[in-house]
Image 1 (cartoon, one colour):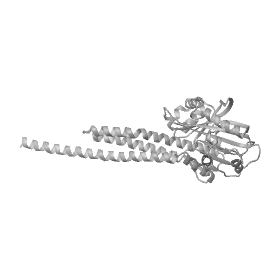
Image 2 (image 1 turned 120 degrees about the vertical axis):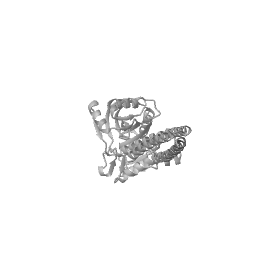
Image 3 (image 1 turned 180 degrees about the horizontal axis):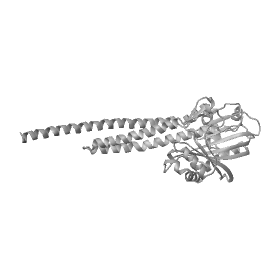
Image 4 (image 1 turned 30 degrees about the vertical axis):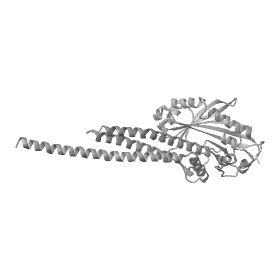
Length: 373
């Protein structure tokens, strides 16, 4: 039975906003620039509470301390700790950590929802753009092929480190109504909707709990571990980058058809060269996207930590990363098939040109033999 008396003694709400800021980020250069210009702490990423051999980063991300900023949430000003994590495949993940202490569970849920209304992707707050501008001003030279209009993702995590009384994970699920926090809605949901929201629940120790959904999560972490939150951030970064490639290929396929139609309409002695140039362009695109998608896929490999592996796999499935990846793979397959066809067509056109040239030479030779017997 759920109660309304439990108090959150210590916790925080973590608002994440991720931007695709460039094609690639030189993390070593970014670390040097940040140290020289900002004078704040930075660190190459690893999961704090997990043995290094249990997880493997393709390229460890770079975490930057952005200081603190004042955020007005539901009529009161909260001092939030700001940070950014840079991934080599071009993603900047910003985090604002809003502390909570001595707050009833209902008020904690309301505070999380108010934070989302203030800092969520639908909100008009300028804080994220200000943080992004600050970051670019400090490490801009490390951005390879910066993005003019970056795609974005957001995520919200409500974390409790201590309640006013000792409570385990099972009791949290039984006594506290997590649905308003996970759904963002105060109105009661149907039994089926509640079940869907709570079905991705994970515990490793009796007194820890992670419940994840598409755009929010609740964590109960008495030891203050951040590993689950870090894994959720990485999964969001992978989702965002795969979305970038999906939209890139969506734009490329019609352009590819237009170029192909134009090459077919202007069929002449230069057609083979046009086919070959278009084929090279498509091959370059396939190579670039394939290389980067492999880098995204290998951003994090959970090897020995079964708990984190389950959370990570569930997050990837919830965020539909495999679906977006499959869409990217299908579009890459179409481009590869087009490249093969263009390559064959170019070879055929060259063969036709050679045949015509041979026939012309034979005709010239015959004419010369008739003129000068």
